[in-house]
Picture: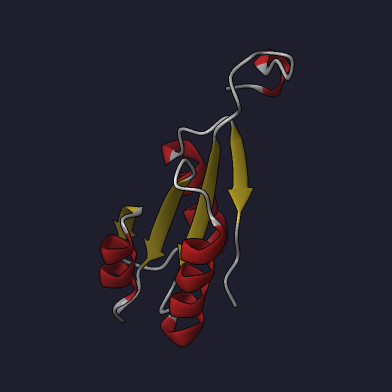
Length: 99
């Protein structure tokens, strides 16, 4: 959806997609998912893009119930964010960088 087509006065609440690129996220990625589990509304779409990681980030994201895409080799956070934005279905995109 383009910015110009969003109508804030419509009766429907906008949907939100949270996009999280990850490369070998480890403990910080696990904490990120815990926070999303605690604070994110179930109506929010979570898109995880695993950028060539070799740890269990993909498995954690799948167990979480997120939409998951895996790149076999690392291409950097910009590629992962942009790909996640293309996959997302929400009216509003929220890009989350886990540290």
